[in-house]
Image (cartoon, rainbow, N blue to C red; front, side, top):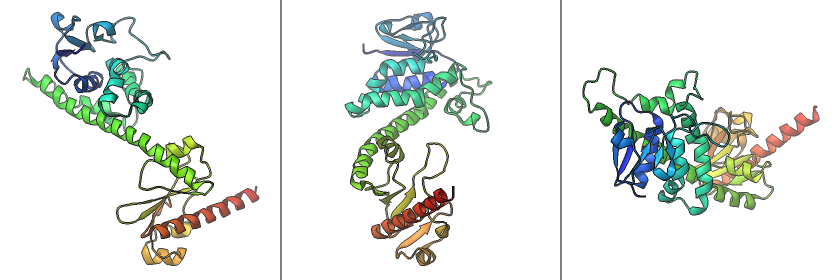
Length: 313
């Protein structure tokens, strides 16, 4: 079915129907968004997809609501919002329309559902309530701040605000998809580099890119540092132990912390060493040779410290 209309409810808007609209307008750009609760619009028909309104979930009829009794649940019992339902049925088509390689569509569909769609679903259904200082900065809250103020008198204000918010919501979805697709491309490059490194402790990459997920997936626990070129120099960086937090598999040498140029060269004895962050998680060099030499020196110190620690137990 190619719809002429994409129907969602009028009045105040939320993240779930905005993000559903992002998916549907990408797939059906010729369709007109209609925001209404009028029976003649929220009744299923061959010319429309209805979402977040209508009191029914019937994909064959093109209606995707989640507010009714007996609303659909995921296999694990967690609730859907309209966004989750639309993503379930149209997400793969959206990814294909975004020029994602066919081989990546299924993995991306699942990972985007887990990391982006599900939190929206849970928040919309009251099953997740962010707390703390960042609670007011979640995507659902930020999108809802774009609604008109309560005493706005213009009857067109809600629709104008909805379409303005839709453009912003679209930018977040497209950026997230692009970043996730880039990680999949990077994974293949990193895996090849891991094979080339063998049992070496330093991984050299052809450019800066996401590397930790591929290293973990490959089980390359022996790697301690990554080296890659930047626009005008070379970078030496540590590898975090976990996805959360900042603890590294190995820190750069303590003697390098906060030093630059000549002072750093004097301490490490490597010509071309140009910078080491005070936090000892990243350093820079003017040449590839210098960067690799810094990484190998950092490996030797890290292994020495590790051996001393193990010997003292």
